[in-house]
Image 1 (tube, one colour):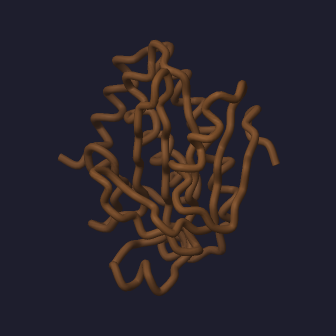
Image 2: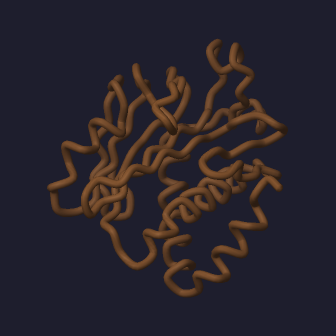
Length: 185
């Protein structure tokens, strides 16, 4: 499978897609590392990110350029738009890196700088499982009452990511306005 000229490398289980993607930073082109499960997924400050089967966990990188100062905003808006595309409205950005709906986390973002690259890790709760229930997380399927294919969420995210990059390249102020309107205040 290819998405917008990205090479997708899929794993059943990894420690963390953020760790694995670092093996591909010196490669030319675009790479996505996608895993069905992470054993040591992490969030900001090294906090544990629960990553059981049923979620979408992936990492990719972008080279530093004139809009990467806004990569967090671009990624968050791409996630919001992806959720809207699946019929999930009313999601908000909990600054700096969570997507929240009905007071519950549905998605998280981790961004790390490595040399001239920004590594972006994303987790999205797609299908309900016991771990998500235990920690009171919410999932896309719970909200939509529909079966959702995880790969469709991935494809949709990158379509939206491309659109958000273009928006910020054309009008950073407008992009920041939209981002601000989607923040939990």
